[in-house]
Amino acid sequence: MTTGPKVVAAVAATLVVLTAVVALTGLVVASRSAPPGQTIAVSRQTLLWSPGACVSRTGSRYDLTPCNGGVAEVLAVTDSACPPDSDDVLRIGGSRTACVRNFLDPHPGEPGGGGGVVRPGDCIALDGGERPCASSGWYGRAVAVVRRAEDCPRGTLDALSLVDHEEACLGSGGHVLARGACVARPPHASTTRSAITQVACSSSLAWARVTSLESSVERCPRNSDSYLEARGAYRPVTCLHLVSK
Image (tube, rainbow, N blue to C red; front, side, top):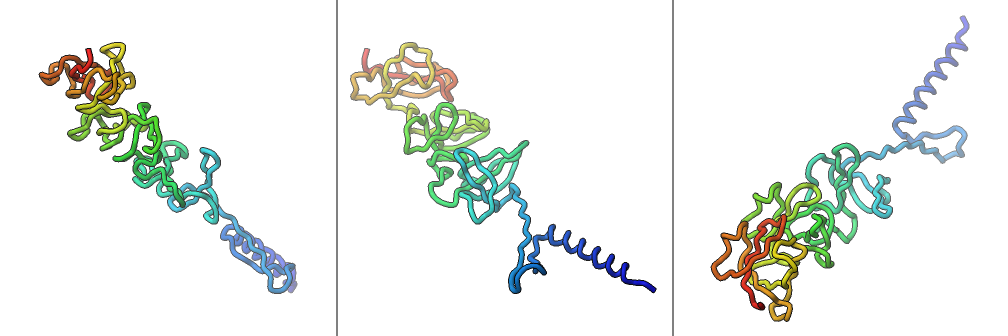
């Protein structure tokens, strides 16, 4: 009985199976053609947007990279809010978001850092974007972040809509007006927030002192003898006591 062809066929089939296993698992195997003591590594790595993955950055673009390199780590992949310590939020398709944090300083996601997830202590521009608090160009500092301006805590002086449709409740600081602040005279009584200029009360440009910020003129304090209406503001009526007529 002749068995040679069958044995050869069986060996060939086994080699095919082993080759497939090696290709799928990335095993390290010894090659018959390699010098003694040396091996050939067969590896295939798949990069996925998942927690623990590493990313590189070129300009404003992020790309997945093996974790022996890269500048940041993926903290979470989600279709909702990112963790508070995220330095950047990346849209990776559909409704999915990758939340990343830098390996090294600086961390823009820290309060006041100018990037990442808006949280109390961050500084916000009038366009709803976050800005580093150490720079110029921001309007107010957030004391809370809520879904609706109506949910802002007591003591909120103003509120701004953020780029993700939440609301930043603003306290004192920046260009946000507070009771006792002085303003220059604007060209019109009906104006916008950006057109109301805060000045030092000792300045020759000081026209009026803020007595209150209210939802309507009727709520202004008795010592108010003028007011400004800022369209779109959290409390649109700025009640004033004139210091220069």
